[in-house]
Length: 241
Length: 329
Image (cartoon, rainbow over all chains, first blue to last red; front, side):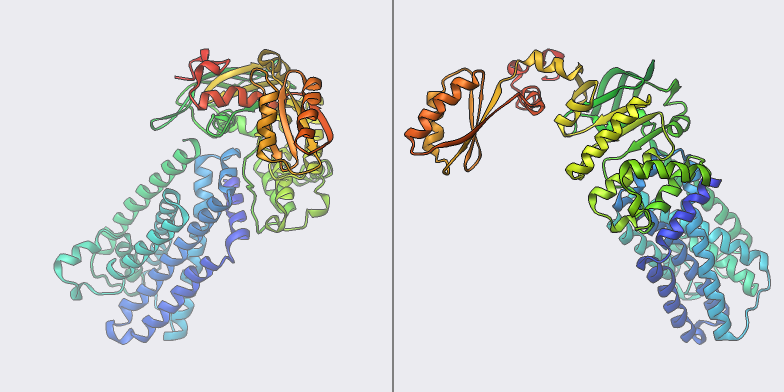
């Protein structure tokens, strides 16, 4: 555990101020939040405010892990980790902690923006909101880790952006189910964002749209466990291939 | 006492076989040189010994520990200098080394003590506060080496350690390696600099295409191959093609080679250097040129390498003294 925190500490000092982390992890979600705030009246507050949370979480969590792994792959310092006495679990946890923390920062920024826009933050079921934020940031971090480990940095960023924008627009975050044609609506369920968003929405407004909150919780847990195992196995394979 | 035992090590990457069942032992306090062209299997061997790679088959025991079963225990007791710069560019040299020390469970006092010793030995004391990313290639290399020595490992694996270092820094590193050996450390040195391996190593393992070609003292390799000496002629004027042809014609011996090293420098590979110089003097003067200086050089380690590897790469198996190893299939 101590070594995982060491990796986290090192990543934090090395990458927290890198341009891609700031632009994709903070500035872009902020811009989206402003846009969403401007269109609040179109879909209603109870849809758009959870969307702000989910989008912030999505971009903030995926940015940190992606940047820290990509930069290390490009500089060669990722190879150094292979020779250190670190277990696969410690390495995964170390890399995930950065994304997890950035996810929390993203949520905090969202909360602040929401407070500025609406003058209050209504949290009806805080446990669900917390679970949504925690599990959501873990899911998005793991997605970022898997993509960044599998691909070279440039195609990795390209694929990650496709995944991010797909989740944002097709992943049940912004558009309500009533507006999506039935055949396309089924695509929503492929994306973990729908389950995370429903948990956050339920926590904030006691409402849900595509999936009920308990099914969302179960699905999110299944996804997070699957992605954690996949990330673990991938790191293990890369470490010892 | 054996520090490393490698037994029938095989590593496959899909259809590519990087190591084809090599076996060797490394003894405590020796410098063990790894030589071979790109793709010979040097880095794979270093990674396998360090526990950073799982072999397809075979056994590796390092410091009495089975690397395949307990890689973390081995990693704690060894230091590895990877081929490429590998520290964190935004952190200072001191912070980089501190983080490395913490990975090896060193406390602040232990770190300070080791940092003092290592920074003095590697000449990095004055750059400890500078960000790694702002350093020159040579200094980055020194910091990479410092990071692998910070926990005082018993076995040190160096993959191309002097690559990018200036002559002064490379010499300092060689001195440091000798010092480490004198206090009982074991060193595995993989390098493209053949003279460096020749000079530093007690024994050399020559790898080609994942196969062990040669394992012995470097001096024995020279004896086996009976290499020619080199005569280096420095001329007053630029050399033209006709002079080279005339020299080739007049210096008539088996396998003698005439090469143009620079526009005014000719190198001749010969068994009889003095006779060659006398003969060459006549030929050069007939060509309206003049020899200003001449050197007689012993066969270089590079020649050894060329003698072994080139015929294998050209599939000229009959000309390779080690074709019997089966590598030239």
